[in-house]
Image (cartoon, rainbow, N blue to C red; front, side, top):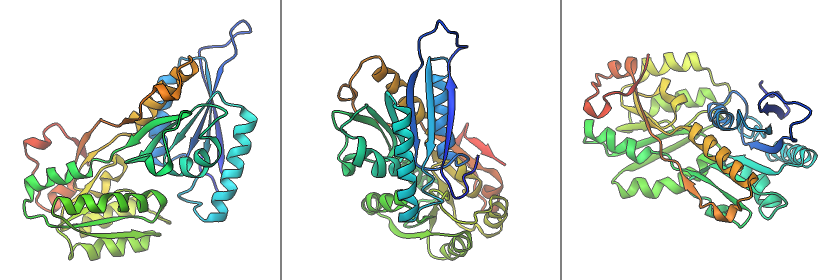
Length: 320
């Protein structure tokens, strides 16, 4: 389901076959920052469903759609609709995925109640949002970009200049502030480019080939007019430097990657929601960090620049 000018709500009943004798299902509201069909959102939802599928739980998912509807007026409208949906559903636990849901809904309205909140997918640290609180806990998302760069340096030891090409969004602006000092600490000179549309993305991708030693491609969900098929062909024709990714949906455009998996975030949030439904307090659940890593190699792009994976990438998943 793709929202067009309006946010969307998806209701999923996750339980065994019900009967009149069974107790009422527990209510969990999932507030997603983005949209159905976006890789991060879909993987988070898959993680939630995998844990809650056989439990007596009713879950409603509301998409704020802030990547495609990111103006202040559109966000205000989405937040108002989300609050109405939450109040009507009367959840026993609220699960909020990614930064926008936390920034625009959890912090101003629900960080102190009336129901417990579990967040996931918040980049690097929840402290800028004043979290955790006695009513809120969650899992922060640590992107393995420094690990991926360290891996790249085993093959390309002269890497000094890093280019970052991404969307212009709240999450990426936050990441820029958090990551620039980390890049400098490992001896990298970084050029950051954040774009709003696909034509700009292509132009900057080609320009950066002459400016950097390695390119990092974080995400493209807020890049307007994105054309996946054209992007595959474009990067194959224009890749001259190694490009890395830390999300699997960016691997069609990168030579190799060390990725996180958003499924882990959804699974952890679902298990924590069940603990809270069983009576545990958010303050009893420490804020966690994601741990899983998956290696990928894009075989056609690797061949295009003459990259031959070594033992460090043995067993990596292949993108053809």
